[in-house]
Amino acid sequence: MKKIDAYEANQQQGLLLNANENPKNIDADILESIIEDIKNIDFNRYPDNDVTMIREAYASYIGVDADQIMVGNGSDEVLGLLIHLRLGSNKTLYTLEYDFSMYDYYATLQDANIVRFPLKVEDTFDVDSFIQLGKKANPDLICFSNPNNPTGRCIEKEDLIKIVEAFANTYVIIDEAYAEFSDSSMIDQVDVYKNLLVTRTLSKAFGLAAIRCGMMIAHKETMETLQTYKVPYNVNTLTQVVATRVLQQKERVQENIEQIKQARDVMYEDYGRDKPKNVTLYPSCANYFYGTSTNKEKLLQLMDDAQIIIRNFKDEYFRITVGSNEDNKKVMDILRKV
Ligand SMILES: Cc1ncc(COP(=O)(O)O)c(C=O)c1O
Image 1 (tube, rainbow, N blue to C red):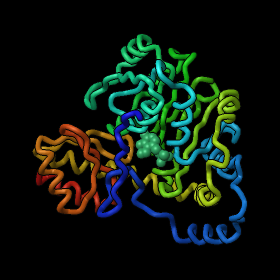
Image 2 (image 1 turned 90 degrees about the vertical axis):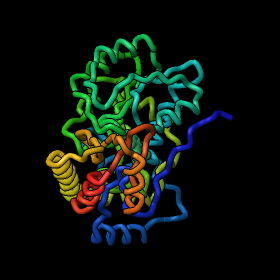
Image 3 (image 1 turned 90 degrees about the horizontal axis):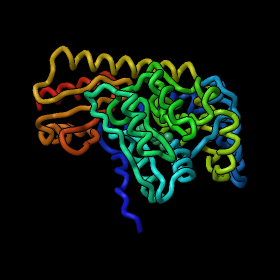
Image 4 (image 1 turned 60 degrees about the vertical axis):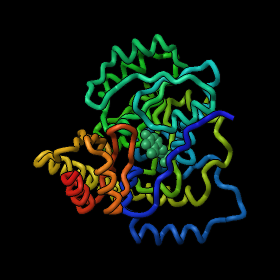
């Protein structure tokens, strides 16, 4: 059996600022319409294998055709599918140091090599060095998140395009799990580049982590090939019903996204006005902050005492999800006591 670092699943009690979830649950009236939809489900039947309702609703949300979208049981599933397809022993994944842990999880399951481009949170991204190291690694798949999890940094779109062009014969996955909180996306490039795959999720900006729904978006021809590998009936009917109802309320989702972006900016301004002595937070284009502390033990203890759950990483690093303004204020007060 291969040795894999177990995924650190999120804790479910306290003020949950550890998994970059949306602080807001769905509105009561949307919930009511979902309950009505659920009454009409034929529970004895398998779900729609083509996931038509979600694909059509999401296609109109992002401005592509429905046949350019594959829906998965979370974006984890579509990421896993691609990694499974492209990697095996003697194959190489090229990603960033640091990035989302599930790439490692799936690549390790496939016995693949992983080459990581070192990128510290303070460094500026040098696309030419990225391409140079990548060419040496000769990868079978390139995959990284943008905005980056955990750092909250964004790579410029022109650099991303340079990467997709430089590795024209390799699938390049840009994982846009947090794109709604940033000002940029590569989705408008999928018609141009057949090797570009963009993944998205409803777990973050849409506040639907509970239902596990994510997408892959690609050029029509690329999707035609990939679609044949989708696991049959992978998206259950309950998920299809809930996601479709929420996707029909785009304006509300957008309003909530704006609130989170605003709360993030207010929190960072607050941080800048009176910087904690022993804590540094880095600017973020996502819904979380990456930070370091010279006294992380104390920071973790104070958070624990206040029942605030944050994500702890090795060495001096940690990550905190942006919550409501009130939650963020509590967090800042604690950071100043470290
Ligand atoms: C960068 C990134 N990609 C993908 C995912 C997985 O999202 P999903 O809930 O759609 O599986 C996450 C979840 O934390 C993430 O941070």
